[in-house]
Length: 341
Image (cartoon, rainbow, N blue to C red; front, side, top):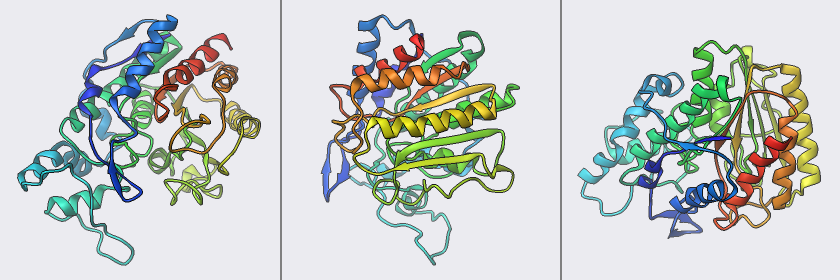
């Protein structure tokens, strides 16, 4: 299996995350990807290549132009204030407030931010662009390769049309899906198996019927992102029926999770897409430090094979997973399970 990877992910090396009232080292850190690539090499999964630069058009095809402009300049604007730490939002346009983007960088951060755990630091934008290109390279090669792994970092599924957060800045899976559609693919399915709901991907495609979005995740009543990902969110307008959420309670084990996956795969089969994009988060692992599902390492191999039975051209796009010691094992287990499936 061909892997797309960029060393530029290391430029995203933030030092602060707000957790439990403390500023700590982020759970989303460069060593995540280093463990994944080490496992790819150790198992001989396949060749790893660098992506090309696809320019801004594929990004602007799904993201608001002002939002993208903000991301590209936020760090420099923040530094210009004389601030000594990393850029973290501290004010938001909450209910009954005016929904405008201020000139002040603090106001801009709050306007475009959905969660304060995600600071903006030096190198964030460069790494984010590289991550989008990693997804685009995978999408561009999908017709020839049939299955690929885009080792994206930072991840993307929480990034909405004009919002960042949850460690995500640009929606890599969404960018890849739109790129395929613009190149002539008629129907895409996106399957999100991350522990957290793919709120950003849902936001982008909620009113459309050319992308079926399905997410298996912890119930937002109990877990981030809290304000999206409920079972009654089924799409709007032309998109009615093309958004499917499977929220599950903390402590969910593999049997229940897999039963929901079967329903998701059946819906994808009925939709008969031309290609499948899998938002691959392995934070469903039992020892993940910020998640509460109970999947074992062998379960990742099993569900990789389950997905393969669809027989679709498939692009895996890396999302979450924060047990640093096991992230490489669990990620490659999915990919090897798919290849064997």
